[in-house]
Image: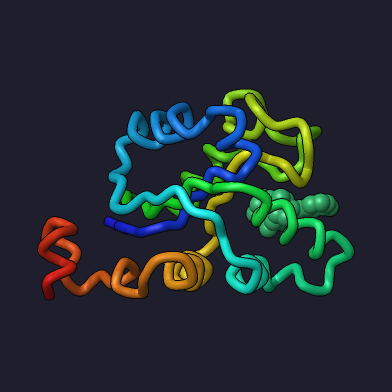
Length: 153
Ligand code: IDP
């Protein structure tokens, strides 16, 4: 058993195109559990932290502008090996390599505006959840309790 939590976000282009339901449906159908979700506009400082691994890249400024340009649907999901499996479900960053059947393969045709984000490691998931929600959501010591009970401990 490798129960994990990850941060999944429908980006502003996905929200504008009405794809929240489609993306939530795919994760539910896969058997994953939604722990938290919120429609939010990300502050510039938090967006810069979220994408800090790209801060030296030429597209960094444009990426921060894009991700703060409108509401995102930020979520925490839990499931077996969810970090690796969700990355497969999301598909490759570039439209020319995102396979049909993946979220990006089915809906995205831009390298930047590619509908959805999913954490690429346990460390990134913890950092991203803590940045936009609260660190408590990344804890596992009480993972057998329902989420409401975990919040009380
Ligand atoms: P990922 O989202 O597939 O994990 P990363 O390489 O971590 O891809 O890049 C994060 C996000 O930055 C991408 O999803 C995309 O929105 C944007 N991005 C990545 N590479 C480029 C690029 O070359 N031009 C413009 N935007 C990019």
